[in-house]
Image (cartoon, rainbow, N blue to C red; front, side):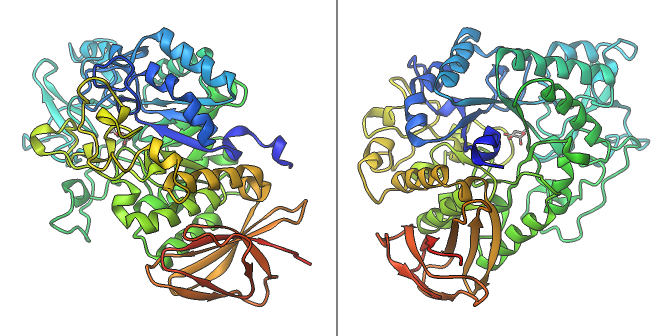
Length: 531
Ligand code: GLC
């Protein structure tokens, strides 16, 4: 298959926007849809192909939009439905796509469905949520924990029963075993697809179905006291149930009714379980999100092993994907430092599969801790640090707002911002731009094969190839701060010349079998001949 025949979500790059923090157009201190529209030029210049926006639906904002009280209306703090329509139109006019968040696992307590459901045991919507009587000893129905800590069950006085919430108690879980609920959620998808959105990122896909028998979760034998409380148990009965795939297939059916749309699933599971979400004959999620680079310890042996395990576990024809950061986890720079974050960017944009870039990572934004009295996130350990406003320039409020930003701007914004980095040849933004350009211009990089070359200490290498034109790229990365060498095994054809290095300008430098890399260096080499 040639590059031009490959669908956009396979060869393209996704850029994840947290709308509250991207760009404020009206000075109220929170980012909004017109703000995103005003930055389309930037997205185009950066070279990404699609944006995924975290939820902008009507919500009491207990979980900052992931507690939806109306799935088909826009929260006024983000703008209007007209703004959303305009966003779709403007993105499409420059060949960019829009992926929206879809939160089918739970609603807000304020959603009319929940308000009706809690009223009485015999009302038609009772079974839309997960209601249970307490256990015989008077406690909650099961030992299931909320991801954010504490019991996952809340007793509701009006209902006279407990309801289950995998996240905040303001986010009751829907009962997706109920066909009426599923049908209503499919209608929500249809509403947005008819508007022209190009796909969904489905929130917490692995949570959608719970054990029919409501069995207690077993204790986690390797739990350590300082770990989050949720990890005390293995969520064997509250997540990743086999029947979840029926829900995923039903979502996919809606997607497949439309032309070239994508179904992405947020799934934190070990690789062997994750790949099940592609589904039988790949009728499940197109892209079950792969968080290996986000959750794994940053160590060459573990990262290389995980890459190979992932590649080796993918069902035939399943398309891979890679994520470095998101709004729930510390930013990549804060996890592994600036030097290694450059390596991570290189991996993200040269591995096989669709990359997702989290806004601000391209300018090396760091976590910016917010003091507990100012925290906006109620979800257990505050996630505000990785959600601070985008740093556009060195002017007031980093160019994000003319008002008071909803979260404090990162302290380093005077030196870490788009305007400055656009002019600096060695900036993170410049590196992202070069990597994106290279990836887009080379079929071997955006749709070619992946071949592992080997690992030696902290350095590993792999090839990207295309069958048709014989182009081969070698990527070698040093995951330590000290220089090292890597010897390419004799079965691979070398030499080549360097196209890009994360450190110095080594362009066109000739490479033979012995590769010398500086600390924190990664390179892309074009192999000159494979004959
Ligand atoms: C997902 C979202 C996260 C949210 C949770 C509950 O993990 O990414 O931000 O808190 O779901 O909806």
